[in-house]
Image (tube, rainbow, N blue to C red; front, side, top):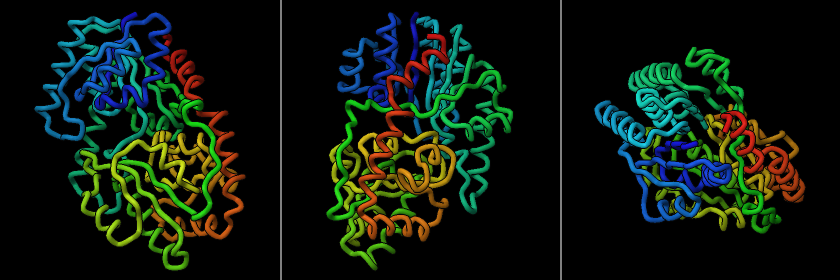
Length: 371
């Protein structure tokens, strides 16, 4: 079969979907890899996997309806030209516009995957009318596009329940995957560092990722344990919840964190004792799956998507969302009980092997989509 994989971020086709695309090609399928920002590296990498990169225009974080309509029409033209048998869209805009375009172009099987509810569905304290209006628009677009989806794949049961409660999709069209998984041979176990105790956050600089809570907790810990180190790995994003780079620069100047920006992350995992993600909501975060695989204890919030990655007290700790004080208390436990870091990290690796092996997850996804 010919499969059109539709993304809004070309690098994700390699970093997140690479093993899946390779598996599709291995099964004898022809894969078209659609994204708006291909460069020489993604084109070369996808060609090595056996896929064909195709460009289309999309404003990943924009809210201009004319630009989105233009993206929909361009996707329609591309799909009409190449006539795939199957479309597989992921991320919010590709799911909405890719699924609609596939229906208009006569693609017979149209699959969608939501890896997280995104900014529009993450409630914020004192959210204004713009946020509420955006949420209403996205809700309506989801309801329209998912009418034409063959199946919607979700990563955690909370997201599935929300889609059903909002009547965005029929229950018989949904399937649960769990995490997308990581390559356990690439993300190998290594004994966490404990001298000094080093906390690591990996993610885009988004308010909804809990970055400011991480910084506030770091301030609290530094008052009593000044030797503790804090790493902040991630760059700016076009998301409406993005924090300004100047804020991260101020944290560095304050001496709170080391911040390299958007860089390859494996070397930073090797420097860490404990992984921290105080996010407000996730699908099942890839960064946490990577932390589990390399054997780090995890501190994360007791919210959808995050709670799937920690058994409290076994491989890490769950803390209340938007609560820097509770986050700092969890951090303080590891500073003052450093002997617990390695045993909890071993439990994290066990969880990764049992739940987040990318090859096992890809086989499950191919079965869910009859590919």
